[in-house]
Amino acid sequence: MRPIQAIQIAFTFIGTIVGAGFATGQEVLQFFTRFGFWGTAGILLSSVLFVWIGARMMLAAARIRARSYESLNQALFGERWGTWASRFMLVVLVGVNAVMLAGAGSIFKEHFGMSYQTGLLVTILLVFLLLRRGMGAVLAVNSIVVPAMLLFTLIILWDTAHGPGADRWLTLRTDTPQYAAWASPLLYAAFNLSMAQAVLVPLGSRVQDRKTIIAGAWLGGIGIGVMLLVGHIALAARMPGIAQFEIPMGGIARELGAALQWIYSVLIFAEIFTTLMCDIYGLTLQLSTRLGWPEQAVTAGLLAICWAGSQIGFGPLLSTLYPLFGALSLGWLFRMMHRPRLSGA
Image (cartoon, rainbow, N blue to C red):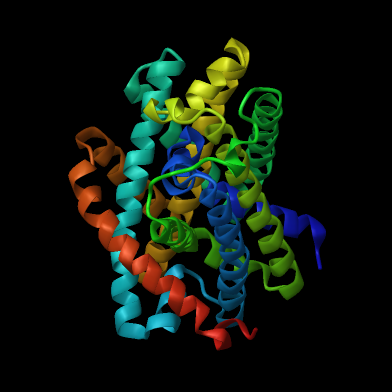
């Protein structure tokens, strides 16, 4: 096993999963905290799935030497349906990344005092320049951003532990049906893992070493679980009032002072940036393999499409695609569970 590489895998795993939805607190609130103390059990279940399926995905990619996520989907569903699943995923990923790019522009405008268009162009330029270095850039950026996110998470935990309601994550009640509380972590893990294929498949194919991949999946899955749990603890302590905030974690950050609130804004951008970079990298490999075009040209084309989408908004498109992609994600998750020969485990 190569410990440094396992840590890089873990950081990339975390950086890909933990995006803007997590940073704002909305994902934690909607998928876990609104279910009260059952949300804690949901986080545990999601963490187990992240470790298990994340490892299986990367091991499968290493075994079949998959260059892109389409190779894995074809192995899962057969050539025909795997190709269609990959095409649908391509549309969803481009739409999601257009929305993330729009979010980056909004952060520049609302928090850094720059124009929306400046934020878009700076983000696009940084992604393009860094991705010229390929997977090395993905690993390097996540190795910087993820430890910073983990540190900020610990600060929030420390602040919550010294305030009222610190134990409400164990006692919080809800009227939400219990079946929904158990379905929610499955949907959360399925959606995020299927989206993470874009970078985890080429990562597993590159690493190849079985023990390193498994160690990276364990560290990454546990890290995601810890961050989810801390967010859940912080939000549960402030329920139900915190649920009224559009950005719940922003409300918590304001309690920590102006300096930490500014750092929080930087981290939201960093989380958007890492997820955007990982997704664009995976999509570049997918399209350059299929079309035979140079990777830099494909990256530039994808960023141009995302820029155009950030101008017109992708709300109606995503409101249609998300439910469909959620159903596809569950099918993908169950298929991963029942194809042991893929990973040899």
